[in-house]
Length: 287
Image: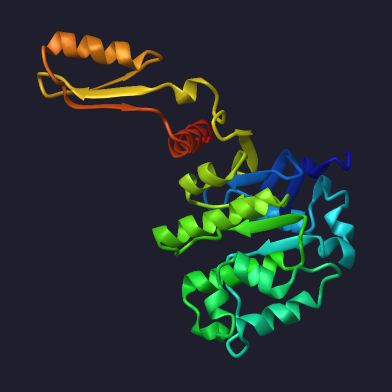
């Protein structure tokens, strides 16, 4: 283990009797990186994250978060973390500014309240009570609570669940600004386009094991990213061809049919396509 990385995990296990919720995970996350941990429900994402946050003890393995074992992290170490969980702030009578002012006093080197309010786009709601905020505004307040302590490492657990498309894209800009400020971010999300937009690297976990870790444009390997040409033949049958030369294939189809092929499309697999394929293949192998 070194202190250069924000997170280092070696052979991490968490067992509940015969259930292996986390089963031999190895992972390194660099400082300043945005890392997305992806997987279906029950894959081991939440357990892994809670171990990193210091909320859950591991069965075995070695874990270092900001140079400290989370099982022995003191208040000084915890003050270096920002955590935005799935649940929103539950404070109905306090205003946005009051709640952030109270939270600010818990940290040794916090950001200014007004700066954080501006950063999350709640300037017009600074004096509003928390129970009067919309769902998207409450989620912004969650992030404000998570970053006001000036964390070195920020955990975002499904941060845009329930957001409309416009609110999601505004939230993405906020996350980009935090990354530009040097914050290391660990993201869990079921929105694969969100992971592709925000993350430098992703890890895909299922059954407590990491299937693959890599850059967004490299995960799954070269074969997983080969273009797919689909069209409907003259007999009405749907045809599909995986190829490294889609333009040549389309030209051949046009030459053969003597015109525009029906339902022609050329698809380059997205992160979501690759993720679903990997999860499906793993399930078949397990079966």
